[in-house]
Amino acid sequence: MRKEQDILDDERLRQNPFSVPDGYVPELEEKVHRRIFAEEPLTPLAVFLARAKAPALLALTFCIIFAMGYGVLSLTGTAESQAVPSSGFADLMEQGYIHSDFIEDYYDHIHTETILEDTFAAMEMTSEMEEEIMRYITLNDIAEEYETSIE
Image (cartoon, rainbow, N blue to C red):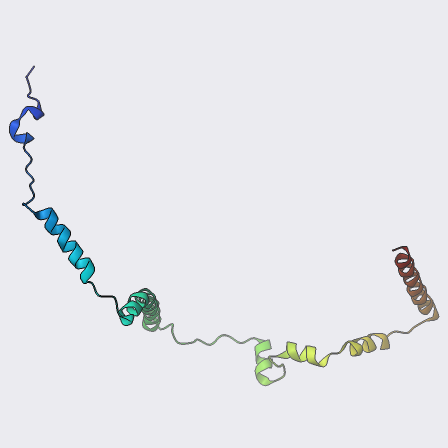
C-alpha cells in the first residue's frame, strides 16, 4: 500500500489565497450609504411608466400575435370571406317572405285571447262538456275552501 499524505497537512494548501484590500469594508459601507441617500425620488412620469410597462407589453404581444395570424390568413388566401351555400330558408329571408326578427314579431302580434278564441272556435261545446267543466270547477273551489278553513 502506498502511503498518502493528508491534504490538510500540506502547508501551502492551508494558506488563504483570497484577500481583501485594506479599508475595503468601511469604504464599501460608505459607498452604499452615499448611493441610498443620493437617490432622488421618482417623478410621476417615471412612476407611471414603471406601472404601465407590463400592460403595454402585454397589449403589444397580443397585437403581434393578431398581426401574425392575419398575415398567415392573407398569405394562404383564407382571409377573404367565402360565400356560404344558401338554404331554402335563407333564400326566403332574402326575398322578404320571412323576417329575420320573426321571433320578436311572433311575440308582438300574438295575444293569449286570440289563441284561446281560435282554439275554442273550432270546438263544439256540448252540455256534457259544460257539466264536466262545472263539476271540475266546483270540486276545486270546494277543495280550496276546505284547505283554507283548516289552516
